[in-house]
Length: 312
Image 1 (cartoon, one colour):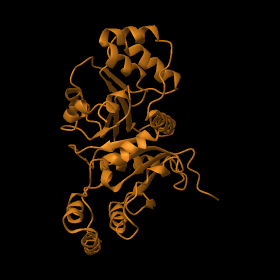
Image 2 (tube, helix red, strand yellow):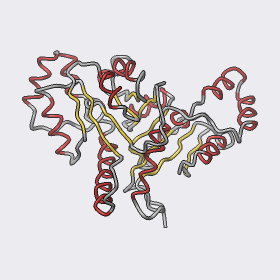
Image 3 (cartoon, one colour):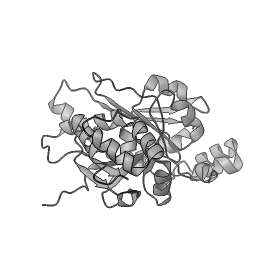
Image 4 (tube, one colour):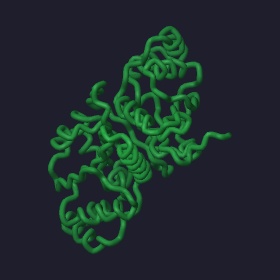
């Protein structure tokens, strides 16, 4: 019986997103591929340090305990690696040592593996390699560049908090184009005029939809386990404010999804809110927001839309 990925939340991760590869990369850049291979072989049993997306991935996989059948998990994480199978063995050993339930991997020596995103039904691809993420987004795939960020992983805290910007992340960027071309006043007018029209989907819309499905599983689980406390929490943190907030909320409702929290900040610095919210991962399409956000939370750049095309 083939293993079906269609009804699961599938995340693709590069080792650069989940582990700290700075020492390994330094060896490769300084001494070349042969010495890099020797280094990885000599350190095969030495686990790689955890990286920025590790707390997010660990907590996401832990949600599989909401279902009784381990052969039918809610979440599947697949390693997508530029390493060849030999040099990637240390990554797999590290995954095993950290007891992460990641058993499926694609190794492509020196090549970007993002072309396999649709084949594996992946709703989110995370990588520390910016060119790979840029290429994936350009191809129309859901991908994010994991930035150097402050991150913490409290073993006593099993909650998972996910925060999204709205335009250019969950939704498309047609409204952002109005903002960039005509300014804030015209942007608000445009949103009021189109308040009953849902936004086009953005790169992470399907990821949000599947996260919401897991939240509904949590609610069903809670009915049978009265002492259970919800672990998964979704927040929208956006520069929108009234009156443009209404179209965003109506769009989410039209997709059958919701957020636990919504912060319509209207120019207030996102960092100040994120430092209190403490998400385990935050997605935004604008580098200027992420430069400060990464000082306080794990941050992921979604290089999508007009804001990013202007920099090409």
